[in-house]
Length: 338
Ligand SMILES: Cc1cc2nc3c(=O)[nH]c(=O)nc-3n(C[C@H](O)[C@H](O)[C@H](O)COP(=O)(O)OP(=O)(O)OC[C@H]3O[C@@H](n4cnc5c(N)ncnc54)[C@H](O)[C@@H]3O)c2cc1C
Image (cartoon, rainbow, N blue to C red; front, side):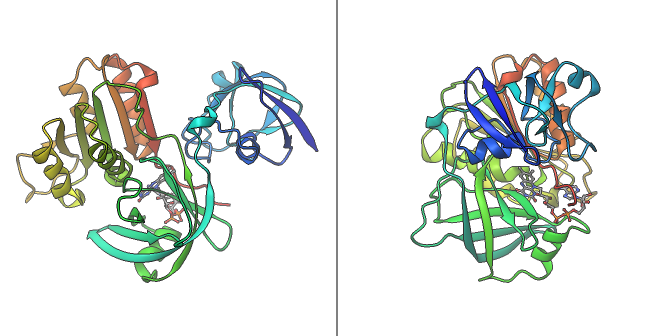
């Protein structure tokens, strides 16, 4: 059964099947709504249900409190219609839209960059044009229909390949396969680009980047994009990791800071090892930022990595007067089991 969904204030309408999420239907129709993880946990697609009823196929761990539900909030990446609907949702203007494609890619390089992170280079088909914004991510489509998300770690057109930084998740199906079995020349199917974690170029605010672990990947892409395009806004990169060995591209980040006076690099270790360099800051990365910037009212913050870090940052930065609309984030949520 299909229901009619009206989006406000854009006046888009679409027909959505009762077994389909509103976000999937919108993307299928070329209507780009704000979204992030597509598993109901990051909350980026949270919108307001003005009229009608929705249902959620999986209720577990949704980024939606009972109070928010009572006030009409809905998570469009999960919500399925149970009546005709009117929804207040942010539609991204057509000019900003990049075509999402499904493509085969050949693994051209597999390189261990630290004890638990691999750098993969994926070669696109020669005749295929694949556009993305620095900071966006792709999904790897697994043969059994599941998908795994990974951020693109290089700026568009940097080396004709897509660069990924893959952290090994203990007991993880896909990352376990990548570490133990995946060989160069393997063909992977990918879909993308996805997500709204990219530089807001119409702003001249100074930028604070907060990366946690492989959350460095999309931020590397954005910083490379800024360097290539001579964007000289002041930038402060805080990279949080457990120990020094986890700062898998520390030399690159230090080189940016050495070569460009507007780029500053502050690594922060949460569980340093006895042998680690004592001059590196220790503690939680979001706390290092609030200590250095007690007033964030004039800044923009881009945060990517573990969901707990992204959430803690959002709350802490709000207390330091960061306007919520200037907090951009990609929480590395994992897929629910199917
Ligand atoms: C938008 C987005 C971008 C991402 N970008 C990157 C990236 O650039 N680099 C990267 O390394 N990861 C990234 N991730 C996270 C990555 O998608 C997951 O770590 C990956 O899907 C794990 O797949 P798996 O099959 O190995 O694990 P699964 O088999 O799916 O999971 C096995 C178990 O491990 C746990 N688990 C899974 N992933 C994580 C995790 N990340 N942290 C803690 N516990 C976990 C869960 O409990 C799960 O039950 C991103 C996620 C999102 C949503």
